[in-house]
Image (cartoon, rainbow, N blue to C red):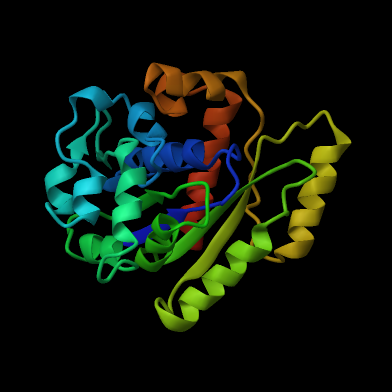
Length: 254
């Protein structure tokens, strides 16, 4: 059975795409056949896996408009067991068209439900509470919530949690918060520690034991079209995402 995880936070710049790409990479590295769906119109997960967006044919826009199937847009990556459903900035226009469409909330779920052969599907959702984000939440079994270790980290999360509650009540009763992943942690500052304590207080039992440090190599990897494990597997960032992936497997019972 496929485990579908939506990596979501309506705030930008919290390490959402970095987490989606690197967790997908390490799941694949551990032998799990993994599909990363780039569902963010910025398309950073697509380029972060070395896919040239200028050369793409069909993308997630076509899947959501139901002019093609998800299986038809999936591309292999240069990493064993890791596949990507790419996107471009045109997905933002698609969302506008989607607003008037039938079944506009469940287009992604239908596409995912009709796609077999993957152990994990990771959805990189947009940094907003948009129609695309809601599609991602309805398609998923779990939500992984990256939260930056900074002063305003918890601001706006209430709205996301309220949206999750509504979706659980009306559209997707099995949706569950897999965990909160603290990112961009600077171990040299007391602020990072204070923010982590605050996050743990708001999400008792839901915070990943491992967090993601600030790391130059982690920031450099996407510009080379590589996950951190392929770019510098001995870096602090690579070791952190490897541990987080192990913890994710435990949390999903695998």
